[in-house]
Amino acid sequence: MIASTLGETDRDSRADHTIPAPGGHHFPGASVEVEVYPATDDGRIVAMIPRTDTDRRWRRPLQRRIVAGRVTTSTGDGLFGLDSRQASQRLVDIDDEVRLLIPRAYQLDTITAAVLWAVANLDQSLLLDDARLDASRTAAAEYSGLVRSAVSSDIGQDLEIVSRMWLGSAFCADHISRQWDGLTEVPTFWTREQTGEEAST
View 1: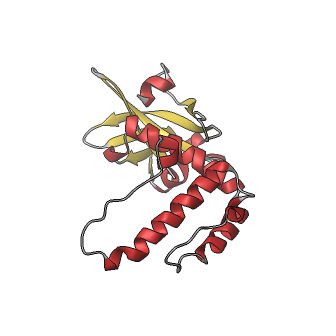
View 2 (view 1 turned 180 degrees about the horizontal axis):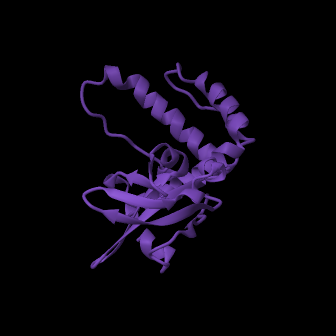
View 3 (view 1 turned 90 degrees about the horizontal axis):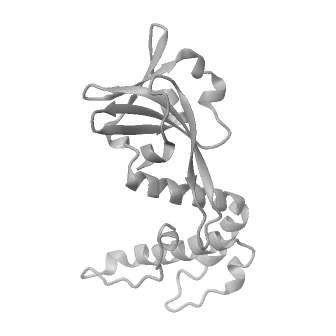
């Protein structure tokens, strides 16, 4: 799925792409930069990276970046990727090239695309509200010991909608965790989440 999104490129050299993480009803939209290198599959995924591409700018990007290996087979292409910072720790020097070993489980497929979409959108939104979100969660924690509580809407009034969604989900998850030891059977949970955006919080 992601392989087709990135389109046709030269299979023998690096190609720079961007995976879109579209906005939605609440999500603002984001994107993930991807560097694709040719790779082989001999039981493990090995991407071949020119030494010139492993300088400090590549190792420490200011924004999110994925380093991916493209394996071409008779049935189509497969992409396997790592976060660039994790990738820099896995590089192995071989003569004039650097090899990057990528676990087969890190295939960029449909499920991965959904996770990237959620993480990219959530990460961007939550980081913008970082300090206010921390203060709001501290304020909400004061209600945690009450048998019945109606948390004031003022607690999250300065937060953007995505941060308010996350705060509500975190409060509910904390409540469930606190009650877990006292349960005698698996409970039936009610959840307000109706869409992928809401569920991803």
